[in-house]
Length: 367
Image (cartoon, rainbow, N blue to C red; front, side, top):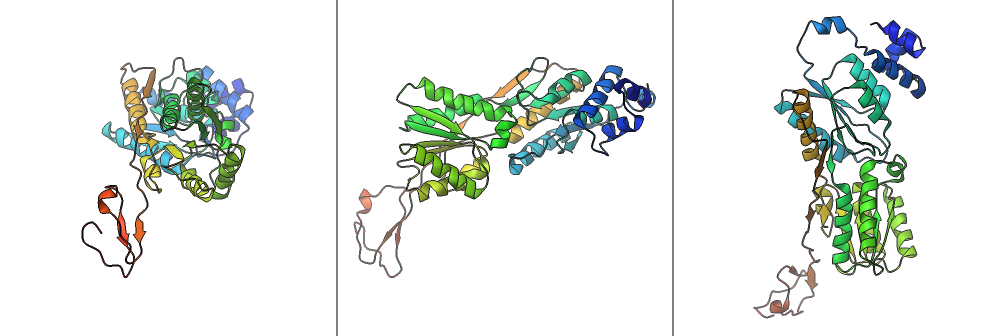
């Protein structure tokens, strides 16, 4: 089997096949798909004869982590870190594939035989890469769930349950007008699975709580100006809004600024919950309750499953990690006393910080 056979089957020049497999030139998606189909149908692998004489594997797994609009780079790096750490436990290296190459990228990697298996991320509901994985037969694990997951190995946070958990927290805090500010519009346009599942879970839980609760969901941009405009428009449309879930990491601080500008007091007459890394909820004031996206753990599970598949060990088709809601104590702002002003310390909450302005003299107990 030669590259000429693949070219003949695909109806293209041999050089075109070479460009698709090497990625050295941009080839139209339609042509790349024809080449990929021919590679899969013929079972073509470069240097197949040489490899048949060697039993050792490449010792490398690939992580297809396309850098697309609406993806938060720090979270992606947590996934990469988890994958690399777990791979090293198995004496494997990790090849990060950050170009958004789609099925053609899968065909190129499979045909080159430079990796033993693949971790696929940012999975869409109707992901064109899924069918390519099935045809190519490359051992793989998906971090995410497509609509048709039969025959695949998928790992993810239960994002539907995460959306429900956020809605339940807001409703349990007394909110009756709630909204989800989700991922950016581009993420929904791609029909990325995790974003759709959060939205579905959030809205479904709102409906389940009956007519007294009104829930809606909107995309949320990432940049500060657009975030503040989105929050302002939401509050104008729903003046009684008293609860927000935010599933957009870079937007969180800007959402709080917009709420403060609108006179809403988070933690008192308004509640906010976040889906994302702990540090996103901890580095704002006030600190917010959050449902953690356990990026490193998910990547570790995915690599572990892939290693077992490569070793001929069966793994579950579906692994869903249960979401965990972390409640953080609301910290009030310090109370500043004017010189000579008295306060009954016994009536002050234990968590309330009391400070004296410059020039003040602390009084005795009870003052």
